Length: 44
Image (tube, rainbow, N blue to C red; front, top):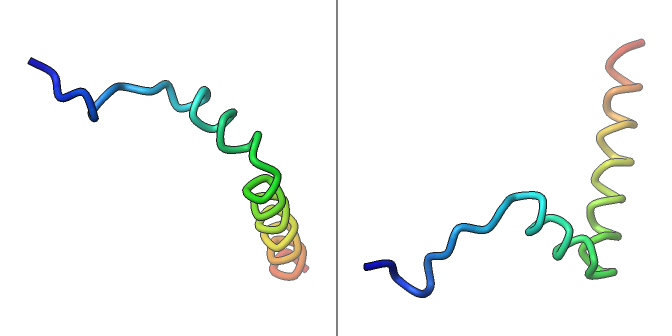
């Protein structure tokens, strides 16, 4: 039997639901900006 709390969720579906939250989406955008800045700083 399967545990009702353990249900396979497709990764993309889960990401879409998470990114629908404005707070999470803002944090992700901020993390992307920081990563791009680090890439820029380290590729010079």
